Image 1 (spheres, rainbow, N blue to C red):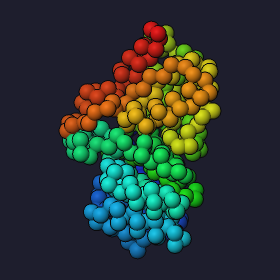
Image 2: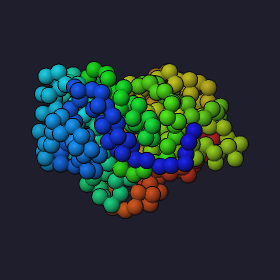
Image 3: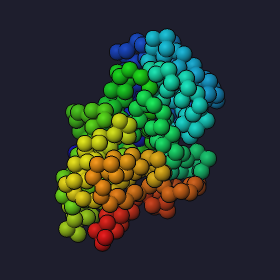
Length: 313
């Protein structure tokens, strides 16, 4: 796996849209006055007749997206995750989720790594909100390669999806020819002592933690759970049975996100100890992304400490 460069998943999203737009005349892209930040700007330049700028009106954006999708198109609707999942939730639930509209909500700037924008823009609730909606597929890519390939699968499938994308550049973990499948976790490292199940930007941190743990004689299995819903239950159950301990890692609240989804599977099928690394029940603050990740306990060292805690018990 290549780790020589860093690319933001929102940047990969922008590149994907232009590539897909050239081959799919049913694709409509929409934005809420943030096309420079969400990276939909290039699609708007190349395909202006298939780009809709809704302005700072996120509820309207989602309602319009539902109507356009129900007329026979596939729509990628973008804004910051805070505004998509938060401000427009009711419209997403009733106009997109309930109708099964073919809308892909591609939300950028999720989690604490929004950084200096502060607590008002740092959403930790979006995965929890979206996975509650019946029929909603929830995707959280770990790098630029997986982002493009999972976006392609999301666009090709019928029905609503929520794709979580980040602001900051993150390591490229996969080779360009790697194949992915929605709903199927990727095993990035084998191990029999503990399993680290990570999603999004925390996947790179999980690999770093596994290296540290190997130096302590602990062999950690690392899973990239890029699809939160439908969750790869088989991978979770196998991890529980074969390693006996699980640590989850996410740039999201430990309430309702990946950790909760994994715990739901474990408690019903193979109860084992589970530790959750993520945003605790607190708001964030303005600051540099790396500093905030450290302060709020979402680093490789925090994953290592969670594994050590399980080992002691």
